[in-house]
Length: 191
Image (tube, rainbow, N blue to C red):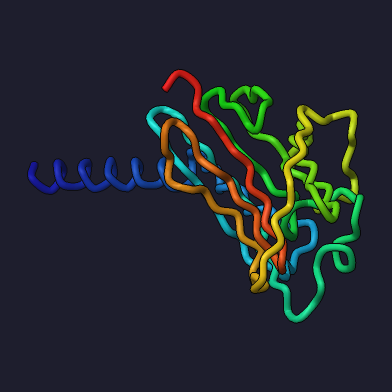
């Protein structure tokens, strides 16, 4: 009797194992999608800030100067720039904010800029997942804002986006590269 019970137990265990191993459909996780370029030349960088319930995150490719003159030569004046390298820079905002004097609703936007010697036009665009600005569509623009350029005495090697510490419900998002700095004031609503 004991050997019969043991055989039934072993057969039931083996049957359950076989059903689990071979009888159930298993889904393999999707392979990560390679970047369109496949060989990014610049690392990915993230700038973020949280103030009360508002979170802002910017994801961008961080190119390096490497002895080049950036604005006016490497990045021509008056042309749409991806504001970094690789994919177009993306900004995510979780609560309404004022960027400059423009009300910005929560969402994720492609962040482009149009450099000029004395100002940058900052463009928030609805078309996400673009490689560079090669297929930029102005009809998908959400907002355009203009901010003055500050010239730096010492060149900045790595393109950098950073936020200042919040003060009086405000922060400044700063873009710096080569000898150019652009400050973008952001005010948090309802704070």
